[in-house]
Length: 414
Image 1: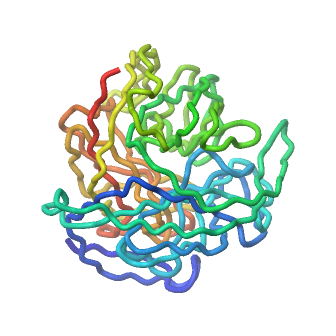
Image 2: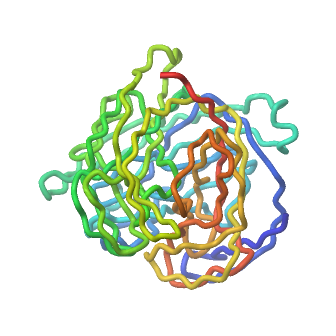
Image 3: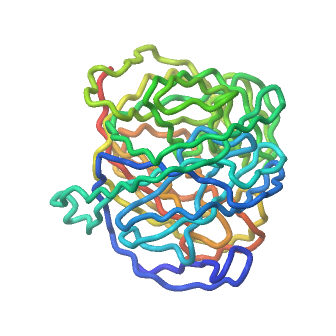
């Protein structure tokens, strides 16, 4: 398959070029160890609430045969890293690469200072192959480089911003591939407007020690997308218990979020855990209100959700998101774009491959029309996505907008 990739030839906001690339149906096998790297601002930047901002960071060298993605739960007092930018033209997974900028979404206006920790990057070690050969792949080589990082940790408390200098090494951790879905449910009634980022108080989500969070990557509320979650006060370490208090929500249309509405879901993955039988088990179903679009307009429906606990496969595949239409873009205004249809096999979950793949913005979420289907069901097809522009511009038919991970999962009995 040939697709057009649009990129900045020199710097973001500079000269745009495009090239045609050949893509094949590839997949990968993932090593059981992942590494964290600190994303540290390399400049002072004033940010405005809701305006996506490209921030220079201290360059991170990433070895060949790796994928990257931000570690979620907001890590800076002013907002969250939602994507990263490679040095130069976005490269292939199999190549050496570096990251020197991040796409930062502010939830408050203020100043990010040089030396601030703006986020954390996960580096996954993978081995790629054509899908027909993926079962015969050996585990990829793991290359962990020791280094010490100094930065400033920032957080808000009662409207005040605090900064604390810290020193840390570059950590690696083992993954169990055991995950649980946690619904993110509004705790208050909130009026939302298209493109105006909002922090919504939610029913508290308690996370056990040794867990990380990955948003589901599917828009589960008719009015917008769950971008990230927030722990109030000083951020906790991964190895500590955490309580999530708020959601970062990006509205795609005007409306009202009611108390009890489902905003989205997060995947909670256990790390450094060897025995799945020792993990906490949640047996109690939850009552929530689903709000989705259908031919009748906005539908609000009370449902009972049972805990979904699963084991993720160590191998996965990629699908490319290719625009099926021309669409004008305005900076910071989330845009619904039709893409070439992608049929999802049953018993699979999806999440974006990080690294901004289009010059004008980043793939934010899969857009749903109609009630969400269960992972175990057939007939799930992606037809539209939510795209967040970083500049005014235009997406044209046939252009690459992003890449999607598709991971097979098996349900674990609770």
